[in-house]
Image (tube, rainbow, N blue to C red; front, top):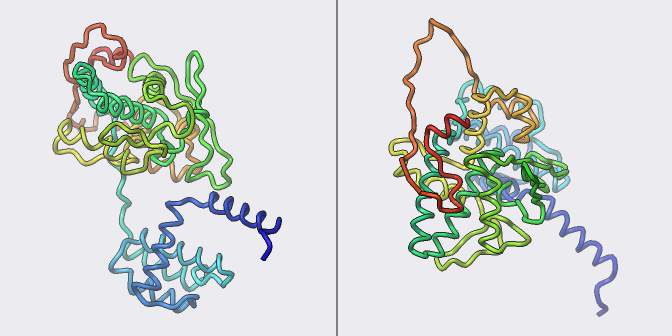
Length: 347
């Protein structure tokens, strides 16, 4: 038996790149859809138009329309990848889905926005916790709090998704006098993996640039993923964070800071930034360019509409979320702390 041929090596390299081209989350979702269709419901593959029509008709009362669409996308992907006719593309299936949507469609649930007011309270709380950790010489907490503040501020001011936060590499970040640029190699909506460059400004308060730099310097990360898991002993992983890590960062302190409010998700950061940008009179196009939305339909799911009915409107109560009154003195490294008055003046 001879060794691997040059053709074998080329095919192996091609397989590596094909695998890299897949979105792991999307691929996993499609596999679950196929598993549900074939293994749980016992339906045949490859499927006919009638098979798929029967499947979605029987499932329509049990799951959301959006879930049905995802499952159809998974079934479609399987047929195309195997070289079979795609039954989900038939007129009969499309007409049936249209009818199901008319009867069963519901408004999509939006992420609860982490507003600028929430951001202010949350970061002030974490900065206070960081000061206490420094006083206790609690190295694990010091690491984790530096990381969490950087995640929140970078995620908010750029409207990053959790997968984009996990893909930030230290070597792709450049610091300038007035800003920080981050190159994201690919993202969920970047089908061609062209990548995009993001720009985060230096701010007087709640600055993402100083928070990011403080974290990577403290953690000693010189290359690879910038935001990483930290275990209970303070060991920093080589891999980037995932969605669950971002949700824990947001939810853990928020449960006591904002009792009675809905839980924040990974999309709460971009929802909150869009809310702030509208308040600051950013145009729709400017918000889309900054966050990286490709379609106006996607953007408008996040960008709140501001409608002024003048004197006829019954104004909602002005519920203000005030930052705790914390005095940190002149200790270095605590530049993110600000009073409510300072924020209003620098907003």
